[in-house]
Structure formats: C-alpha cells, structure tokens
Amino acid sequence: MSKIMENNTPGVRSGLLLIDAGNTRIKWAFTDLPSPDDSAATPIWRASGSVAHADVSDLSTAWSGLTVTRVLISNVAGEAIAERLQHQLQLVFGKNISPEWFASSQQHAGVRNAYRNPSQLGCDRFASAIGAHRLYPQQTLLLATCGTATTIDLIEADGVFIGGMILPGLGLMASALARGTAHLPMILDQVVISRPFADNTEDAIISGCIAAQVGAISTALAFQRRDHPATEITCILTGGSAPVIGPHLPMPYKSVDHLVLIGLWTSVI
Image 1: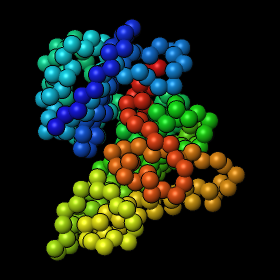
Image 2: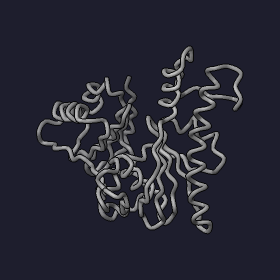
Image 3: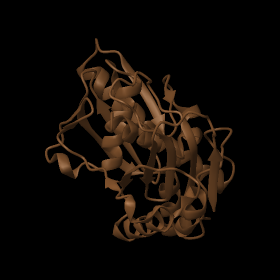
Image 4: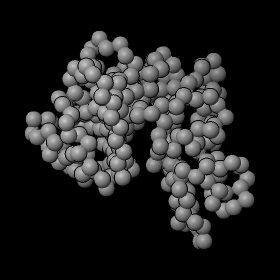
C-alpha cells in the first residue's frame, strides 16, 4: 500500500529526489536542490510519499511529472530493492539521471563518525545523525529511531557520532514473542495500551515490549548523564513506532519525521 502527499509550493530551483529505503518501507521526498548558502534548517517538501517493498512499482506513477535533476538514495533494504529502485528511476527519468547512493564515511556534513570502522555504520543512521545535528546544532543529542529495529545513538554537540545501541523494534519484538511462545497471538505494533499491567494477553505483550523500548532509551540517557552530569542532552525520537513509544517516555523529547531524508538533503549542501 502506498502513501503519497503532494505539496505544490511554487519556485522550485532544481529538483532533488531523496529516497530512504528502509527495512520495511521506502520513503521519498522531492524538494529544491539546496545551495551552499542555504540557511534553512529543513527543506520544503514539494511532494513526498512512502510505499511498502512489495509496491515499489507504484513509484513510477508517484514520480511522473516531477522535474528531477539529482537523485540521492539511502538504502539498507538490500541489493534486490536497489535494483528495483534503479529500474523505476529509469522508467520515469530515463538514463539521464544517475542515482547517487549515500554511504557512511569518516566525516561528512558536519558530523564525524567515531565508529571503529566508519563504513560499517548503517547509512540510514549516519544520515539521521547528520539531519539531527542540522536541526539541533551545538547540542548533545540522544537519537532514538524506532522502526523495524530500534537504534539509540549519541551525537555530541560538536558533531561527533559516538556510537549507539541496536535492539529489536517494537513490532519485531512483539512478533518474535508471539511466534516463539505457544498460544500467544500475533500483535501489531500500533496497539495502544492504557495501563502498564494489562488484563489480557494481547495488551500484556504490547505493554512489556513498550516497557523494554522505553527502558533501553532511558538506560542510554542514564549512562550519558552518569558519565557527563554537567552536559545538557536533547532527546530526539523518530521512526514509525515513535508515536506509540513516545507517550511512555519519562523524559522530554523532540519528535522528528523524515530524519533520514533531512540528513540526505543536508549532505548535499
């Protein structure tokens, strides 16, 4: 199933198509190509949307009519999705457009990657770090991305990506529990609970999984506060499960959508 949102704001300078191919869905946005002196913290999306992996062919319809001069892709979905994206791009734009594939590096767009092997860091996490640093410069950031997997990353105020934690996402955690335990039902991660101690099995699974997600984020914050008690930390929450997890967090946080796409846009400035 695809989701398309149009924003036909006039005055496009040059068309930039940004694509975030994640583990479950492919998100995209069309915007102006930024200039080196662009002072805007975030881009204006002229059009945007998302599709499931099974619906990649819908992208040719969504992109028809766009005047694209550059394409930048973050892909963690594997080679098969990369090939299907390449095919859709050629269908719409022909061979005049050669997509660029974003990759993690040691330093880019104001962020220094302190991973032991910088290229091993997922390109989506690096793009998100770049986007977060763009939105909240000179702030120490705890960035929790709540998707198929949940990643919790630390970016220092000077733009150093320190590292992070990876755990199963909310939906994956609930599904694994349901598959691995006799007679437990399959649960969707969109279920909302009203109290922590549930009186039925479905809500009890979700309550436990939310508690695990919240506990991981809270523990990461506690570690940083213990080691750097004088440092103010801004918590950022993003990803498809963020609206479910966010209300249960005990600390203030900023909710940001499309952080990978913001990071890709920032990377071309």
